[in-house]
Length: 288
Length: 156
Image (cartoon, rainbow over all chains, first blue to last red; front, top):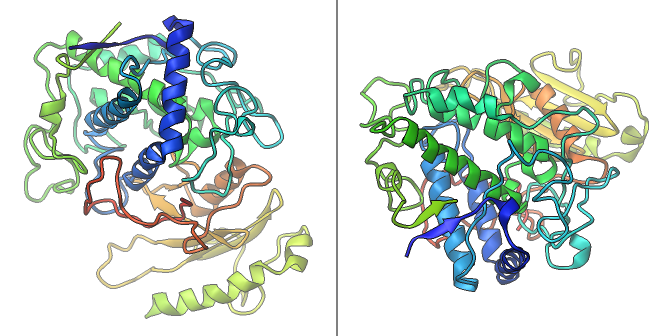
C-alpha cells in the first residue's frame, strides 16, 4: 500500500498531533537518539580519508532517502497513519510560518541562549531532552533566519539551476563538484561566507542552533527539510527521464575518489542497499 | 614521535588553559611555558591561543611532516580546554562538528565560528568524560559497520 507524504502546511490538526506524538514516543523509547548518533557518525567530509556515504558525495541523496525511510518506518510502528511531511522552504519562508507553530515544531530560540521555548520540543515541556550531541546543551536550540546577521532561505529560482542540470553528479564527486544535480542541491558553493551556502546547506544555516552541527537530527525539522530535498530528487528525475545515479561503476584505478564514493550498484553503508535500489521508491511512497 | 611529543606539550597547555586567572584576564593570554615559548601571533600557522567572545581558543598543529602523509596538516584545537574536532574539506578548508554545513579557511577561523555557534553557555563535550561520549557504533537499524567510526566528542 503506497502511502503519501504531504506538504506540512496541509496537515490537519489531527495529523499534526499524531506526527508529534509519534516523534515524542520514539524519543521516549530511545530510538530517536540512535538516528542522531548515526548521522554524526556518517558525517565524513571529503578532505578526510575513507568512504563517504552521507555527505559531500554522490550518495548524499540515496543515503538520506534510506535514513528517512528508516525513521518513517519507526514512526509508523508507533502510529501507522503517520508519514513524514515535507517543508517546502521556498513557500513557507518566515519565522512564524509552518512548521514553526506550537502544534508542530514550536518557534525559534530565545535570544540569550537560543533555547526553543515553545511547542512540543521545548525542553521545558519535559519530553525533548538532547542526549546525543557535540555539546552539553540539554535543550533544543534554533536561531531562525539568524537575526544577528540575517540570511534568507533559498527561493524557487535557486532550485532551477539544479533541477535543470541533466547530469546527476560529476567529477570530482565531492563538495567541489561544479556540475551535477547532487552538489547543486547539497549546496557546497565555491568561496566562503553567505554566498557559498546554497540550497540544502543554506536551510541548515537558516534554522541555526542544532541544525548547524553534526547533531542536526536533534531538531525534528531535519526530517521535513530532507523530505523536501528527497522530493526535489524526484522532480529532477521526472524532468530528466532516464537520467540515473552516477557514478554508474566504481571509479577507475588511479582516480583519487576510488573507494571513497559509492557507485550505483555498490552497497551503501550501513545498509545492505545500493543507490540503484533506492532510485525508484514509487512502490512505497508518493508525494502530494 | 613528534606527534607524541606535541600531544604532551599540549597537555601542559591544557592545564594552563583551565587556570581561571588567565581566562578571567580578558586579554588574549598565550600559554606561558611549554607551548608559549616564543609563539608567533595567533594563527601563525603552527599554533594559536586567544580569547574570543570570552572563550579561550587554542590550537596546535601536530602532524606537519609526519612520514607517509601527504603533507597536509592536522590540528588539535580546544575551546575552554575542551577538544574541538576539526575536519578537512577537499579544498583544504576546515569545519567543526559544531558548525557542520560550512567551512573556513583556517583552523582559527573554524574555531571562532564554533564559538559563535556555541553561544554563551554551551560547552563542548569531552570524549571519555563520564558517560559523555558515543559509547559504540550502534546504528539506527542495529547493524554494526566498519566505515565512519569516528569516536568524537559526543555525549550520549
